[in-house]
Image: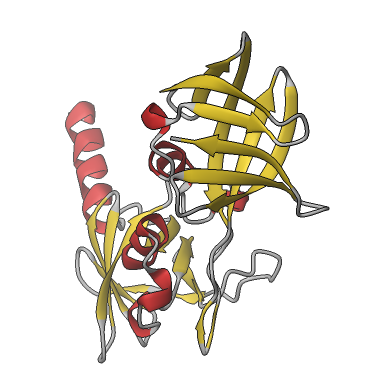
Amino acid sequence: MRKTSVLFCCLWSGFFFPQHIDGVWLNEELRNSILDGSLESKNSGIMQPMFFEISKNKVANFYQVEPSVKPKFKSIKKITKDIYTDGLAFYTYINENTISYKTKKKSSTYIRNQNISKDDIFDTKKTLTKTYIEFTRLSIIKDVHSNKEVSVKCTNGGNEVRCVYDKNKFSYTIYSSNPYYYKSWNKLEFYMETNINNSERTYLLEKQTNHSYHLKDLTTNTVEYVLTY
């Protein structure tokens, strides 16, 4: 009898307690626009809010990326089994990785942030590292200071790309600056974090029109390396 009671209590609690929707939820259209480089051409309306955070039956919407600003949370109330509202917008829990956001004027999809790094709010580093440069086609690395060019071969190591050149090894990851909207979208900049023979550096990464990439010093803005297909 006791086992039956415990089971009944668990089922009863599971029925009335809300789905686990706590977390940071990203505007899917905005994230995809960062990844495919189309952000500057997009209308800002569908991109707002950029992301929202749900925590302990409260929600905070973010219309710009300002991680240093303390978010303003307001209560979120359960309407039906999977639908919640903050009084202005409705949040429909689709599954553990997807929420539909709807107001009177628009509807958009939000996906769960899978990482814990505040430096990568839109969770794009892993994908950008794999796709921003066709790493399998990289063939030459040039040291601009010595004017020396050597062959390079790269493979995907999971969270980073690993390369070998002239008996040396280096790995890299790529991430973008955060989007910002004021009358128009800012032009995103891209950065490459490198580890060359245990020496870690971050460069401004600039794509050129001739299938090459410039790695610029962040302080002097001078090109130190060139990667070429």
